[in-house]
Image (cartoon, rainbow over all chains, first blue to last red; front, side, top):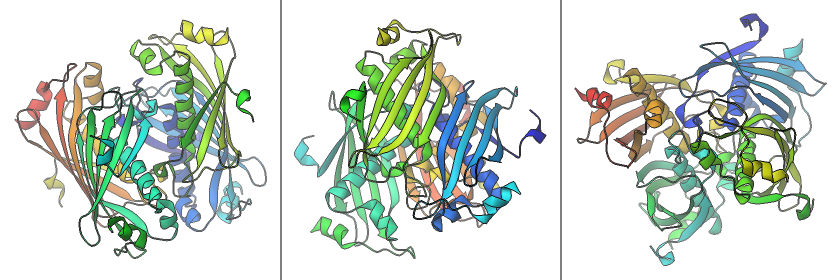
Length: 134
Length: 134
Length: 134
Length: 134
């Protein structure tokens, strides 16, 4: 992995309340990490998840695939690295990898497939999102 | 404690993801239990938190006091018991106790002070809430 | 769907704190629902996730696939339905579907692939789990 | 508030999944913020919550008081500011304030009273914690 390989990187640190009985980050928390990194990536591109929601345009996930490679633990710093590619006219694939910072180990690989829908649940891709792929 | 002492009771079970490194329910989770029990209590009285939020009436917490007596653990069933009393024209006190079901031990005592505000952040008490105290 | 189609069913209700800015259950929360239902299923079979963790046998997820069909909302009651099948000597597939109770609509389809590892991270399948497939 | 007034400060940003139906950070999440800031403060002083837990010394909260002043929203950066004082031989008070960074507004005031207990639940204050007050 080099910095050039990804369109966006976010550095985070494990919080102890995110860890469970096994002493490692709970499986559901990785999806929170991916969501947060994704929203920060979109924000960098001028796309504000919360503003869109207020305007009844909802970015939604239709499928998530998560490969758990190694568990993050208390004290770990990690990078959430994101790429996006178009899957169809109305679907986007976010490829997201999580690396532990101290040894650059791959901890999780995620593929999040999303779209945007309007108030009636119909696909409605905001122009700013279309422009991600120009 | 007898059932008569409380205006509302909700029976729940600890979920493993709610437990942290110490193997017990994380401190922040109790406030989730209290919130859920409170919303169920209000729903029983015809007050729907989510509907109110849609209509720009927000039930908000202004102060929370939580006394942690004993920790809940994986597998525990527990009761969240709720009473409400009026603290002022616009403030309500929800007295909430959590008991472990297998031995009736008091695990947590909470006092949640809340009010309701409109879109401009001004106190605005829905009639249904006023009627809790008639 | 009929009750016979699944080895285990758990009835739950959406809690308001599980819903996000969009007014629906946050994507990461479904994985918590699946985990809780899975642990309840295993408990029914005599397999206690928390006890195993204390004895340094960790049940771990290696891959999760989640298909989001429709969003759960505040007030919804739902069923988490679970089947398990053996994927290999050391891997298990949990097929988990979530249905909204009032109209029996499929809300989410999940496939969780897991294994069990010992303190050194090596596959170590407890006898009780092996017996799930006898 | 000036930087000198607090023994520790941590800068964080609201994550969208922490916000609820009302479009603001859920009440229970503030306690997660306070816990994380507290653990970072302790780590700076050489006290590792997770390591202590592994060695069966548990830092526990006995009481929490939270005054909600204003709600944090999506996109907000904020500071969690922490002071500690001794309340008794075996109890500590962590005074924690949360400020929104863009306008320095006080959002929440917290008082967390804690102690440390050994495997039998008896107070057992690690030397490193005693030394916080020398």
